[in-house]
Image (cartoon, rainbow, N blue to C red; front, side, top):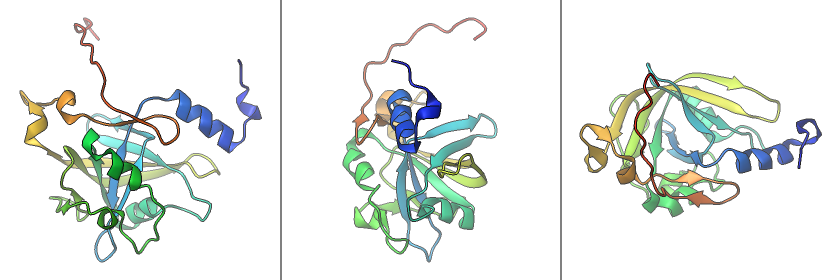
Length: 200
């Protein structure tokens, strides 16, 4: 089967993208500086875009009613936290995509404990293995359908001692979640380690 991209509408393109780019890591983002409520939302179009300084990027699509609370908070406050969930938090992560008003907090609704950050004013999730405090660098708008790519610089890491081995984060201890097409997720499966490639 060949599909000409020019024949697709936005929904058709989305279905092919989420079925092709798999599995995807998930940025579980807290945003909102007090007195605003803490907004919590998962985003699976997520990657790091710079090694040093460390910079992360994730895409936020528009709702039919307009921009999401996350991107508005980030642009107003210039800071946020990217949390990485372990597999034991799958239900809460999925439920945090519930559509709430800007005056409501997904973290509060789900009973998720928050902890203060060190360098930004937005709190982080207390129980996740990894949290990255970020300051907003730029938002890049790629299309009229609302794909806004948010880029932030990591200014601090919170890493649970339980997932560190020999000074490195051990993926098998983090047990991260990945996103597939639709409301489907994947857990960490078998890991194959190969010898380093010379000059690679």
